[in-house]
Length: 203
Image (tube, rainbow, N blue to C red; front, side, top):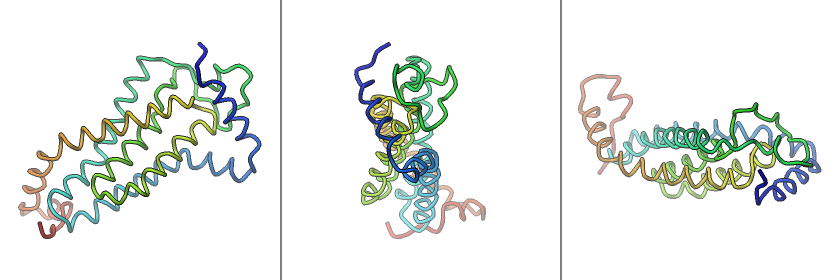
């Protein structure tokens, strides 16, 4: 199947092959390590929210859960579209920097981009100023998936949008029950529950 952005994919991967070695290595590391950075941000936001309002804490806990839901949605869509990876499907393209995923590991949408888009929005919902950090990180991760040759541009755009939409909906829908649960845990006499939720802060 011929995709409208196959030529753009060729242009980006050709450009990638002519970048300095350190740029290529950085992109290959970032395309996976970026997930770890988002995980670290989730932990940092949760830790800070332990001394914040119950609502802020509830949203901080929902953020990684919303991201996980976005990942599941991305996987479901992959199995429906069954789009072949460009590193196998695009004729005349430069060899990908990363190893091309095996057949059956479909391309559309990008799971990495969906996770990045979801994490960026979910974290920003905990503290709006974080969008200045998380949005560029998500965009870089999405671009890196095309740069290393394992996704089409439309895969990562769709992944970012899917992740952002699902995360927003999941946080909005889950906030009230999460607040009730957090209130119960903060009122609990169990040390583990009180440690996890923290003492809270002024409303």
